[in-house]
Image (cartoon, rainbow, N blue to C red; front, side):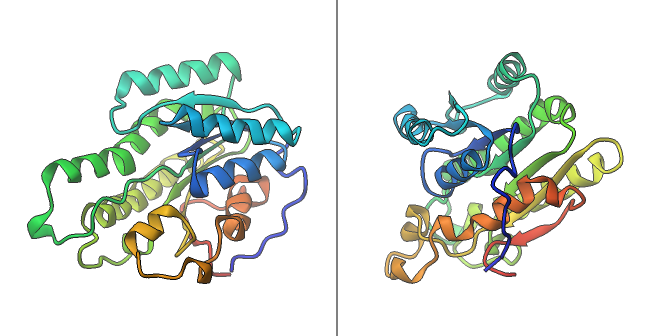
Length: 248
């Protein structure tokens, strides 16, 4: 497991946007960032789940978060422009962006893969990450030390039969991260890296491996050290790298 002991105030005064913040790894990352001092913008399609995370942060008296409901499956350029405008108005800058939201889809061979499912997965996992990052870059560049984290997968490094659009979208995500990292290197304080969470106790994992015993998997809480490391200033010189949350 990736080991990192984060200082209590690692993210103090930072403004961080987390996508897919209502459930699973996104929810735990949002709570973890808030616990370490960040003002977290909770983005997801379900207002109800986002409000539950908001309430938990408030209950613990961590910095007051913000909620931004947005369905990435249908979002386009204008939606991400509005997101950037809202963040600029409310906060003036953005210090961190965690692209966590993803769609898995059904596991099936390419020969049988539905076009519409392919498009949906690419829209959420890749296209929305591209459009959002593009619109938020001016705000990220205003930060003294900004971090963009993309969520990868083992099947985004080596293709696997039946993983279809999900696998291809994660290969492309790695490419997007590397291009962004290279472009920002030397011209801004924005760094970009990726995290492969590995097999983790989430609903997505359960749908992919229904016969697996979830109790044998690490929880999202267990893999948070790498999420903290890459979002905090201790990693300010790390750029364009792919991390595995369950490997030291």
